[in-house]
Length: 459
Image (tube, rainbow, N blue to C red):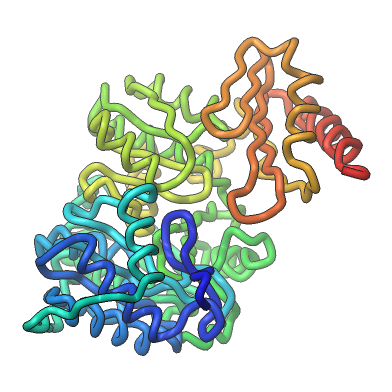
């Protein structure tokens, strides 16, 4: 493990016992306390079976370097984000592998004010210190205490809506045996205490690191039917499913149909602009027309950001944006430390449904008709540069706009594409959108699929 394969672009992730073990976790704790300096550090963990041992080792490392630790126990990533600011901590770490396979684990970091670590400076310094393993322990180890910010967290999240705006609603929630269940229960209790007329049907609610119902990852098509069936069986108005550490949530309408992430971004933009017209909304550049239309209609100002939580949070802080959204189901909120949350979106969408008096299928159906999109289509490629150049050569001369903020974006009068490389796999990721023409969407997708395939042969 000398090459530290567990270090990724923004976080730690790898197979337990192969890429990541308790020894490395201890060194990461030492390095984290050294990079961010003296103070207290929040540590939380998901329900994976390897998480308690990795958490204990990380805590041992932080304390060895003189850092005090506030251990919040089993908690979601956003609870660590909240606790870091709530306790005025120097930093926070969540032990989690989110939606990765069962033999994986990892860590997500934040600094003071729950800001992300800078990959080029802080995270690279962290990696270098772990690699060197030449720590000088503090003369006096740091302290330790266990605490739970969950009641304060639940009050804060519930405060994103006015319960008087709601009407009676039945909602199916699927935690996938990840860590979402207890946090959800605290929020649901807080909403009930404030008079919210919501009824919940809980599915796979108990945290269980053995994941008896499969790894919680609703972005995979094969994982969606269980939530969809439950929505229909209970006659629910809304379905919600989370990934393992619940920093992403996925929505289903009253018919059990999955709502694609780009439409959720537009829904949330409209909901927040109803509260604060004129606010800035940040969005990623993969699928933009529907989002920009919703922002314009809500009287807001759209701001583009490169994809990725570090870039999104940085841009939101820079322009003081009220909300930021990515089609990958990451949603960021100014009044949640500019961090992502998987609990705030479903609450705000429920409020939007009640205020408009329209079911989710109608709200989304209107957007799908105006701006059909392909969803993200992945192409395995041997030479991504060659394939991207072929697409640019074919379509670039006819484009009304060419942008390279995040991959290649080409805009035309009636359609648009974004083609970008995967950061972790030999894949090209394609998104296409049109202005109301679903037939064109299919034609353009077939054309580009053929073009990439032809330029992938013998590459």
